[in-house]
Length: 181
Image (cartoon, rainbow, N blue to C red; front, side, top):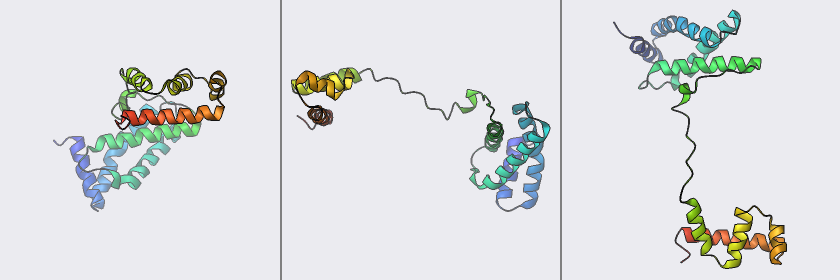
């Protein structure tokens, strides 16, 4: 006995190659399964809305069928379309749906971990600046002071502080690339 994935993928490949009978057989086979997924995920929706979603799924499969990679499994592609159509229906109603994060774990990026050497490297680069430029970088970029506040403290105009900050940051970038030796 051929498993569902193999059978449906074979039918879908044939359908995409122009075999209308294979396409008809595929649609007849997948529709009850898609209907079950829609009912399970959209259980708070009425039966007519659920059937509308099933029809939306079938239309999406038809219009997007060339986007399926024949070398990839078919079932995840079908299930993803179905999930998205259920979510779309809830969005249209203004309701929210919570999908298990596990369904999307492969597509989610992890937050990058903070670089443990970033502070040390920044301090090394700032330490290579002339003292006044280093003070401006520390005050504006690290301590959060405004250029006006730093200018008042250092007897500089706000514009002069901005120019000095820009030059200091450019100098640090050059130093980081090894061009400021």
